Image (tube, rainbow, N blue to C red; front, side):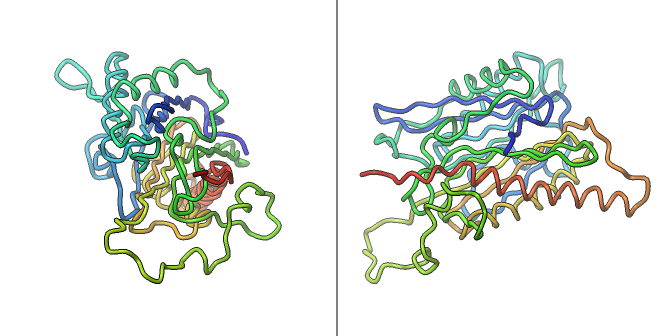
Length: 319
């Protein structure tokens, strides 16, 4: 399967709390200085911070850290902790004698899953996750499952455990493409016949059961479960911001291949793309440029699918 940290320079840190009403956490992806990034938000219920700054038409092209967090919109405060660490370490957009770190963030909905609705990630947790990422060595193992932002994650309308998953692939031209996913989806995993993904296969219900609506829904039953799958795609390829955006867009295909349904009104599905710029693509002709980008973006979709399936434990939620 590999991991997103197979991309040289990419580090991942987790911080989480469980027990005493807590079941949530923060995951920080810390790239090398000068990493270019963009994002594509497709879900109907996103909770995001600083994603507009990653538009290809805006001023800043680089990203200092990406924060994935629980706690819905409340949890986005954890990005302030990552931003504080970046400022302390001189990472950010230079301005007025200081720096402004570019730290986009996105959140999953896990409020109340530990029993206390007010137990959600804080700025200190975001800081701690960033410290943990910075302390890792290049190529380190990445915590999977119920860690970081995946601590309180569920899938399949809250029936099964979700979590953090990761995967990578190395292409013939030396380009590495990795993905990290926090899987908290409304949908169920899609597993094709013959694929060796037993934990995911064990939670797949019959097709009609995925879309069954109660005969008599109660007027006071409240809204359906809120969800979201968050993904960071990273590569060592040299890409500009527009190409990062297009790669993030292409990577959403992997999300749709892994989860059914995906990109629903109740999911805030978001894909970030980071490019460290170590390996130049073949741009000798326009055809070569297109083939290089299409190959990379196809690989991004593939590793996103694998990372999502890697984040699904198949364990039923008790109680």
